[in-house]
Length: 130
Length: 112
Image (cartoon, rainbow over all chains, first blue to last red; front, side, top):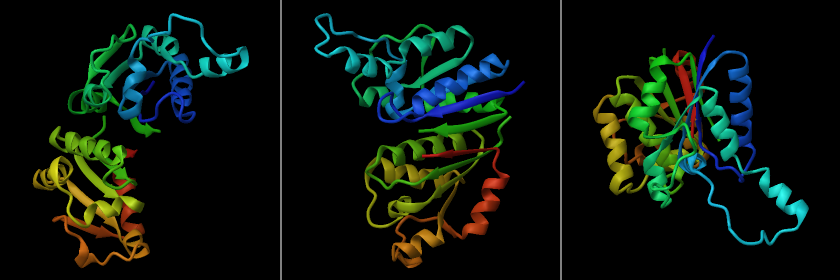
């Protein structure tokens, strides 16, 4: 079984790269592989817990359902609970004013110089998506 | 285990992807991985003019710690950039065949 390291660069909504990364990771774990995910740049805030608006959604059903499809915190938490190592880049969180936000359970604060280079040590394959 | 790293940057200074690629290349090289930083497409614009501040310093430091900084000749030609117009020291100019060999020899290729 292999260890796979994915550096994700895209956010949740701009394209399908984040969704693809999670589906690929889910499939890899299912097959018994080990998965490391490094959330960098726009992807860095995917490791944060959601902060829902407490009032009415202000969207009709179809639009709300469409937008809900981009909310990935639950799937990221599920991946972490299944053993995926998920680290963020805290400097790109800092640049977005999100460094102090609470993480999804299992997600860890990290950086390029430590998290990603440590992931490389044990990786059989490593690549970017985004 | 990964030993050799290729970082490919296709965006110029001013795009976050350029900064992320530079930081990743520097981190990999300083972390002990043999790292090639390849500027492709509009990424070659980062090698002309004044790249001041943090990003310029990162490129300089990457070369100083013996990282391999490369750019693709075809992409310089397409943009009318003469090799003598490069203002970042230590950049090697390679062709498509050279680049294919660098990628073949890399344990991991990361595109920004």
